[in-house]
Image 1 (cartoon, chains in turn green, yellow):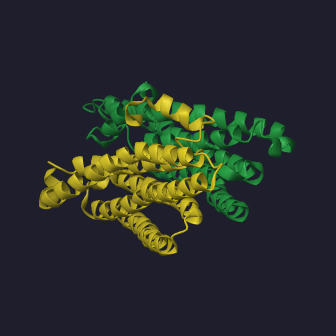
Image 2 (cartoon, rainbow over the protein chains, first blue to last red):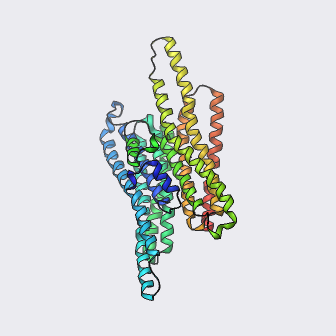
Image 3 (tube, rainbow over the protein chains, first blue to last red):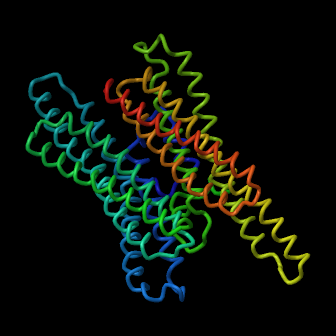
Length: 207
Length: 207
């Protein structure tokens, strides 16, 4: 499992000519780092007298950011698997018309999975940035730049993964599904770009 | 050394209430991932007949992106060390006026280091995005979205690290140095924001 690799090994694999891990997996890891920074700021707010009034809300936010971190960590690996399965479909035999039909069906099925994994990265990034916004409002003021960095890393996770979603949507033939997933993608990207600007404004005002 | 930790351990440390690793280190790791993706696209261009005319230039770019990756990897750790040393200075005794003067001098000296490490992350990110731009122009067209994701991750590395530079500049008393480092920061951030837009345009046009 990728997440038990050393940073050095993961980065070496990312830089190698093997196409996976690639941009989707790296985006998920960027999301995991963003979630971790948001969690750190929550933990540095808990137990502090100056923030006594927000302890319960911060505890709720911490449980959300840690849940998102766990999900991003899984997505680091799931993206590699989805990519590997899609690559395997493209290598299926295509001698006979039956083989060609089976290959096309397999590719189309796997393209959906290969789009859904990075789409979940984008949607989780949007959710994380909502958390960062509230943490920026009520969290420990001495570490606000860490929650802003968390939001920035979440935003690039979303933008990077969005490129991978679009590539897979482009090859999908089910137009209704392409439209549906495209709409989910746009909605999440809007939340991300608006949210990250809001976090920057809040942190700029409180810092 | 941080880079030999597992991803899981690094993320757990980042999420913990220990203030380091924090946003500066995570930004450096985002830069290392961006450089790794740029290297991957170079490697997937080398040895391909369709790209015979650009082999030598791609080899040069790969050597630059791998050099930047190595530097980012070191900065993941150096940021933790610079932060630790600065924290230690703040804990120096301040009973007597001599102690107070020595403590202030130590803090001021260490603030420079704590600003220079994330500043190097920002400047390296700017350099990496210049590489990504050329790779996007001449690299293997089937993996362009990976180089775009690389540029996006480099951009958030630069933006996240810039927040850490600014925090340290704010406490520095040497105004000439603050101005000088602030200027280097602005210059690098402009290169980053212009460069990442350019990469997106090139990739959008070629994909």
